[in-house]
Structure formats: structure tokens, C-alpha cells
Length: 308
Image (tube, rainbow, N blue to C red; front, side, top):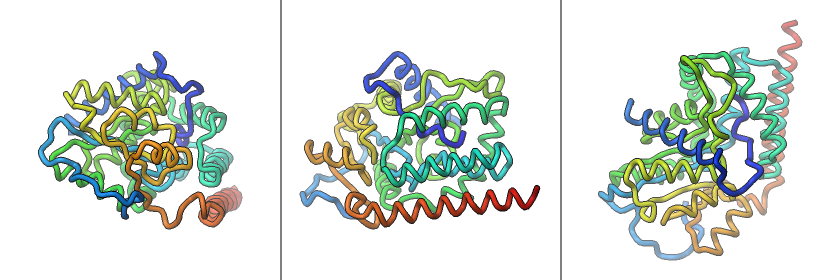
């Protein structure tokens, strides 16, 4: 499970598999919800979100938008701690996380390999088991990594009486844990196939990434009776331009270079809650991140060897 979020579809347009993934994620999100700092642009903005607009909702990407880093990397750390996989796998996941922080983009080959590894890890495990573990891992690794600024944006929508959904390539079960802990309405995420409550090691459609995210939002909006022109979407990645383009109020949050350029060209709102502009200071924070990840991996390997 530790790296599903790294996969990028090889085609940018929505395919039948994208539509299937989106619709499956929307259905899982609806079922779950029923069960249960300053702007970059110096312009005056109208009051938003609009109080009492029940035809509007907000859709938030997770990794580096709501939470620092990749949710699945942190989840992978928790699974390693619980002996779901070997030290060599942790080292591989750590390298993928470090590469992502340094490069600032998602590599298709890394993500393809990560998807295959993640599916093999969860195959045969019960869905309820992963949900329970997800609750523990949120407290251990994720809670302290929520961006306060983005959290405040989500709360503004909630205070206005609107529903707020996470939209992420992470497995829907993990996404639902995070959404519930943040007090959000629910989550759209990648749907892993299960039979009688046990993971089969296959996906329903494809990972909820890129065009699949847009399809999930479209399906959920139709089911909920939302007017997408009155909805908002928030993301850090140019891969989410299809989702951002669906709504009337797109926001670029901690944007990568491509998204920042695209957002400025269309006068989209921007917010950046990082300590410094990534384009100007990538060497300092990225190097620090690589060091922290590499150090943690080295420590884990050393501990493992001592136990042999």
C-alpha cells in the first residue's frame, strides 16, 4: 500500500478505465459519508465561499495540498513498523519519496513499480484490518503534517454549510480516515478490489489520478446534485488540472512550477503555505528532506541488522 499515490496514467485523456475508477471512487465516497497566508495575487476577491449555497462543494487534493508529503509514504512507514514488508522495501519507498521531494514531480516508472508493490502488500489482508491500522498511523505520522492554511480553507466551506471532499490517488480507505479526522464530508480515492472483505490485489479501474480524479468529481457532483460552476477545487499539482478545470473556483495550493504557470495564465487563485518558494529554494528544503528520509532508512536498516 505504501506507494500507490506515485502512479501517473500514461495517457492524459479520460479513458474507460479512468471513468470506471472515478465512478467507483465516487460511489465509495458517498457510501462512507452516509455511514458515518495570504494570497499570491494582489487582487480583491469577492466573498467566498457563499454562505448557504447547497449546490456548491469543495474538492481538495491530499498530498502537498492538505498534508505535507505523500500520505502513502507515511502509511507505508506504519505498515513497515507492523512488519507488513521487508527493510529493502522501506528503502525503496524512502528513495521514491526523496526523489519526489527533490524533483517536485511524479515519475510514471516509479509510480508503476510502486503500484505493483503496494497491491502485493495488501493482497489477502482484510479491508477492516487496514482501516483500523490507518487510524493508528494517522495519529503516528500524519496529524502533525496537515497544512493549517489549507485546513482553514476547508473549514470555511464547512462553515458556509457546504460539503468538503478529499480527492486523492491514495486508497479510499486511507482517504476516508483522514477526511473523518479532519471533520470533512468524505473522500474520493483509489478503489482496490475486495471479495468478502478481503483484498484481491487488483484495482477497480485505475488509480484515481489525473483525468480519473476529474471523472470522480464529475460523478459525485451528478449524484449529489451539485453545480460544478459554483464548486471549488484545490491542488498543488499540474496533474490535477483536469479536476481544477471542472469547477468555477479553482485554487492552486503550494503549486508546482507547471501548475503555477497555468494558474497565472488563467487568473486562478493561488495560495502558498510553504516556508519559501520552491522554485527559488528547492535546494535547501529538498536536501533536508532527502537527508531526513535517508537517515531514517539507514536507522531502520541498522536496527533490523542488530535484531538478526
